[in-house]
Image 1: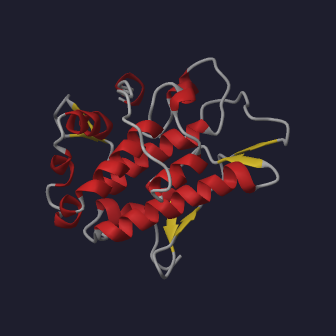
Image 2 (image 1 turned 90 degrees about the vertical axis):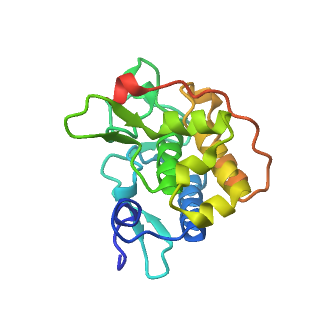
Length: 213
């Protein structure tokens, strides 16, 4: 793809504008909805992250790298498999003795959505610093405190579009719930991003630091 991966536009020197980022997030959600619900064989990607999102000439998102993907038969909704994915994006159930479902992609999408919102990585460790700065924790803290502007201090567009900012953060917080049964399907995520359905107040997603640090 001409424009490379989403990663370079989130964490590099060239940042995409707020509206463009929201459209990319919606495009990714629609792509995952297709993999989960429209394919004859359900596909669980298992490694959703900015590096695996390519941008075409129009900056439309394309999900790539299906090397870790899991295909389910038509009568399957869950599977048992070894841990797959990338540190910082893997869902809690990968570390538990419970079946894996498409909700692992929902979790990874939620983490990536926060990164798209804030243009920073979910997990950041300063050199020589033992403290781990976890974006997903900050997002819930600022949401509860009604200080979401602190997530986008250097993004005037995002701060000005406060309602959309709040909606996207709320969607992300639902996606990263520790209990997979609380996470919405990607179909519902898409509808929430399209503002077709109400986004309810999300509960505390519960910290997953012990698994990603």
